[in-house]
Length: 280
Ligand code: PAF
Image (tube, rainbow, N blue to C red; front, side):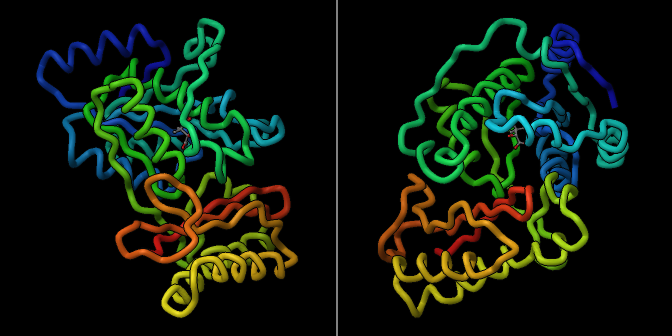
């Protein structure tokens, strides 16, 4: 695996590879890699000639300083996992390299960014969009891979590619779960053993929502699931919603023609976890 931290150097190398006709599959990450990331990488490996992975903890997408500070970082462990998965190129720039100029871009994603994560993490998606645009400009991948756990992020990135008219295919990848159902996330390693034990409650409750869909209408189901979360003293629910999978707005009734997904964000102590499940 080749390691680059300079934009100039990776550009030179990738231009050479492209002139040899090699296609690039790209997995952007913030490190603290887990099986979820690795599944994206394995897919990218099979669909492209070269796998490029970036590790950059992007400060401008954190709306909370404490969250940024405690975000897990371990480049040594990450590098070993990348070697094992057959990553060809790791791009791990520092902040100056990523943002040499002051950043003042503001994207307008409309209602897509006004709900759920967008509502509770002001500025978050603007920061994600800026870093993803910059990374795409540097790497110029044929395909880029994103996990469906961050379903709203995936939707926003598809929109970003449309707005910026970028020539990259966005490939969604299914959520990878621990055996007990907890969605894999870098944040899971911040959970205490006791918190880790109760964390699968989130997915169990999402499954419950899915099971009930044939028996109860969307509005009362939403309220029922909110009550279930609020009744569990381990969690502090931020939102639970049942939304159209295209425009991410709340739905009020079932319609088999509209893809529907239930999304949740909840705090377990001071760790914020998100998850979702497809209902239709
Ligand atoms: O999903 C993530 O890890 C980050 O939001 C991303 C896409 C790497 C941008 O920093």
